[in-house]
Image 1 (cartoon, rainbow, N blue to C red):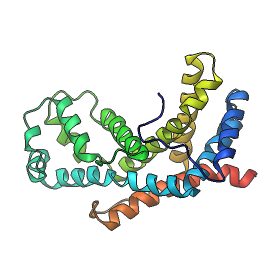
Image 2: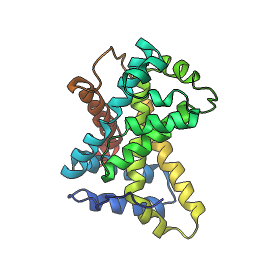
Image 3: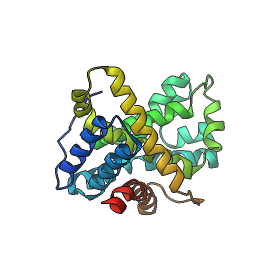
Image 4: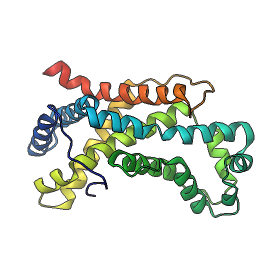
Length: 239
C-alpha cells in the first residue's frame, strides 16, 4: 500500500470533488450510491485533468508490447518468438523467471507514477494468466488461445483500479481505525470498477494490427477512454 515512486498529488478543478466523494463514501459505509459517486467522480477527473490524463494515456501504451508478443506467439510459436525478440535467454528458465523476464520486457523503462501503475497492472494480469503453469511450454498454449480484446479490457480494468488506490490509499487509511476496513473498501471499489466496465463495455473482434504502431496505440487509448466514460456516466446523469 502507499503511493508509488514519482507520485505527485493530482491537481485540477475536479480533484477536490473526488476527495470529498471518497470521504463521503467511507462515512456512508460504502453504500452502492456512495461508491458509484466516488468512482464516477474519480474517472471523470482522471479523464479531464491535463497531466494525469496525458501521463496515464502514455503509460498504458506499454501494453502494446505485450499484445505484439502475443500476436507473434500465435504466428511463430513461443520459442521462436523469444528468439525473434532477443529473449532467447528465457528459454531454459523456470516458469516464474520467464514470467519475470517477460514483465521486464513488456514494461516501459519509465519510472514515473503512472508507469509504475502500468507495470503493477501488467504484473497482476500475467500472474493470473500464468497461474498454475509448471512447464514453460504451457505458456504457448495460454497465449495462443488468449482473446486480444479480453486482454486489453482486463489490463485497463486493473490499471484504473490501481490508479484509484495509488491516489487514495493514504486518504482511506487515515479514515479507518483498522486495516480490515481498508480491505473492505478495496474489495468494494475494485468490484464496482470491474462490474461496471464488464457490464457496459462490449469487446469487438480485433484483427491483426501493429501493436507497436499508431493503430495499436489508438485501440488501447480508445478502450481506456471508453472505460473512463462508462465509469463517469453516473455523476453526469445525477449531478
